[in-house]
Length: 235
Ligand code: ATP
Image (cartoon, rainbow, N blue to C red; front, side, top):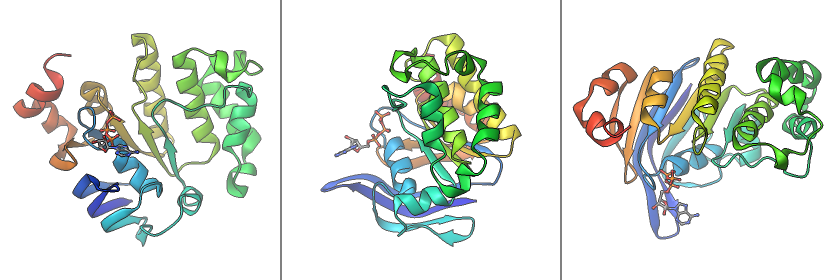
């Protein structure tokens, strides 16, 4: 469904991705793991069109999207939930969800999808009139997921959804990602929490200083001594 071939990208003189190859198959959860500053967020930003690749090709459902604008990429169904959630703090939960359904394709299904979001996250229903800025970190993450669902994603890209959350909220994040899989949404999950990511995913990539150094099934990555030593050992 998504294929990055030899993609390089960066910020001015800084190259943050070097000849990256990533493939995500339809319906799967794929994980991109790596430490701070390895290039995970840049990879997602490059797929979203927010950072322009300096080399390589990105294909989505068999078509090149390398030169499309972020708006055109969203319209294809690639929805990016950035690190830090970025909900609109002065809008209510309900309004934040409505904003997620801004494209014509999503607007038509707005009410139906909102019902599904509230079924998945009853806590958001209870707080639907509350300002998003007054939600806890975990609740804001649920809202960011809910808002992404409102956009009718085909591919959902999640940047560090578990970051800074209490263990019970990390479980909620895992439950939501599992739900996305069951409804057929393909997920590319970026995480520093490698164990969580590899438990949820079928395929994983390890990125170090902008290069993919390992690409394998999650099962094999979980058994890989190098992954264990660098990303799982202390957790
Ligand atoms: P983190 O989890 O800490 O966000 P990451 O793996 O997502 O790490 P990136 O944010 O993609 O890493 O950063 C990759 C490299 O690009 C780093 O060296 C970082 O300093 C650099 N970088 C990221 N954003 C910018 C920017 N806006 N301008 C310049 N350099 C940047």
